[in-house]
Image (tube, rainbow, N blue to C red; front, side):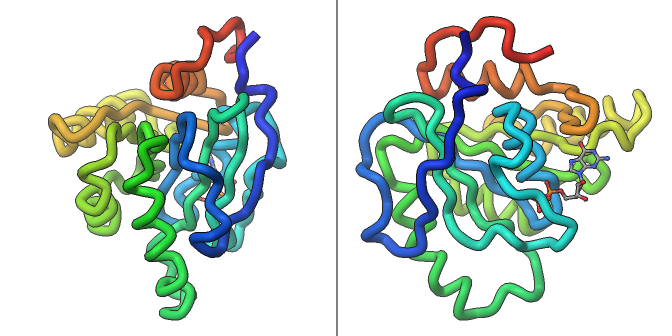
Length: 200
Ligand code: GDP
C-alpha cells in the first residue's frame, strides 16, 4: 500500500518559528500561480481537496505542509508570478523560503510548469534560487491541452533547457497522465516504502 492516499494536512506555516522540526524528509512543490500546482498535488495524493485549487490565481499564500507518513512531508509553496501578491507578502515569504531551502530534510523540489508555456523567466529565477537544493523535477502540467507532437516537443525543450539541473515529465491532473511517474520520483526522494498500485 502506497503512502500517497494517506496524505493528510499537517500545518500552514507563516513564520519561521512554525516550521516543523528539520527531521525526516520533505519535497516542496513550486510553480507560477495557475500553473496547476494544487491540482498536481491533489492528483499525486489522490486527495481531491488536499491542496485547494482555485480559478483565482495566487490563492495559496502560506507554506502548507502535508504528511504522507511519519516525518515524510510534502510542502506546497506559494505560487509566484502573480501581480496581486503584495511586496509585504513577498517580504514575509522570503525568509521562510530561504529557511526551507537549507533544511537537511528537503530532498527535492517539484516545479510545476504549464506545458503550453514551458519554462518562463520566473521559473528560471526559481531554479537559480533553488540551485543548492538536492533534486529538481519539472511537471509539465495540463499536457492534455497539447497534441502528441506538441507534448513531445514540450518535453524535449524542457529537458534540454534543464540539462543536468533536473528532470522533466509530462503531467495532466485532468487525465491522470504521469501521476505514477511523479509518485515514483517523490517516493525515491523520500525513501518511501515501494508503492503498490496507487496510480491507475
Ligand atoms: P495553482 O494556482 O498552480 O495551484 O493551479 P490550480 O491547480 O488551481 O489550477 C489552475 C487552473 O488550471 C484551474 O482552472 C485548473 O482547473 C486548471 N488545471 C489544472 N490542472 C489541469 C490539467 O491537468 N488539465 C487542464 N486542462 N487544466 C488543468
